[in-house]
Length: 184
Image 1 (cartoon, rainbow, N blue to C red):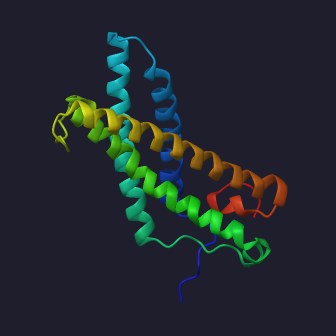
Image 2 (image 1 turned 180 degrees about the horizontal axis):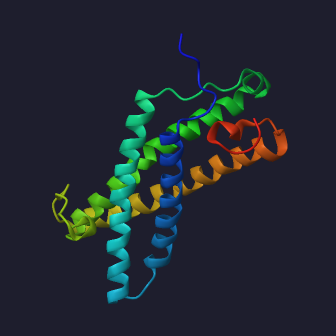
């Protein structure tokens, strides 16, 4: 019988870290560039933002594929028994919301770019197909969908990090050791 791992795999931890850094970076870039005046620098940042969105979409797909084919370590019994039901629910809901928004935010950005008539050419190598026809009215709606879903994702990331920090510094239960941090 194969032993149950107590930690996430190295691949899972690397995808988690890469996606975390990418999400924080692209969100900060998006907030910064949104109010810049039209200029070559703004266009360059928009392209980088799109490339980062494409990368996040790809990393999210790889992460989901890995997660579906590699079971995560179970929550240690002592931690599971000590957590109130609402915290279990909040944890599960946050993780589901993160996965949904990992895909929804880049897809909203992609459809917004399509509707606005601006192609996405990741790293200057190939052009992604347009998902919707050019439409100013649709572009206006999709811009808001992208913006609000990005802020929703940012809020869930903050909640996720806050939960991890709570386990590390308040509960001191070693939960972060499953990700290779803390004592376990």
